[in-house]
Length: 127
Image (cartoon, rainbow, N blue to C red; front, side, top):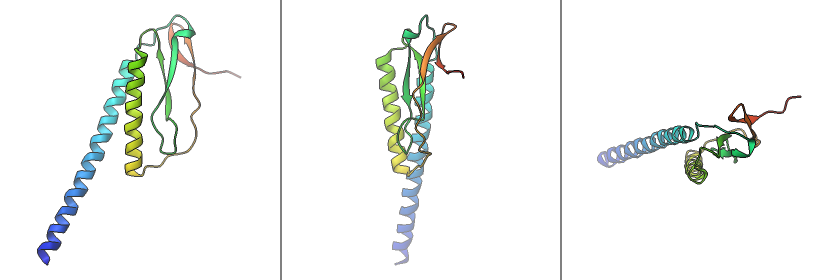
């Protein structure tokens, strides 16, 4: 009986350790994916606002993105960017569900982008 309890306890520890490893691996994977995406859109060169875009990034546990990323249509492969961001958002959503994560439920407003001094930037309306 003691052996069965000991084996059961050991199995529980191993399963728990494996879950922690998966969580840690997914967190590291998300960080790496985010860095890759940010590097992919780092060149924000533009000549007019029509060559600037934004994309919803991340997956809040309450729903919606964490933020919007700004990029240049002139320098970014938009289809590839959308694919990378979709993969990131999907993985983050799976992690949120699996880990029971919570967040504020504030909806992030899409940004308006403009070409300012040759760079695509979020545009803020001044009062």
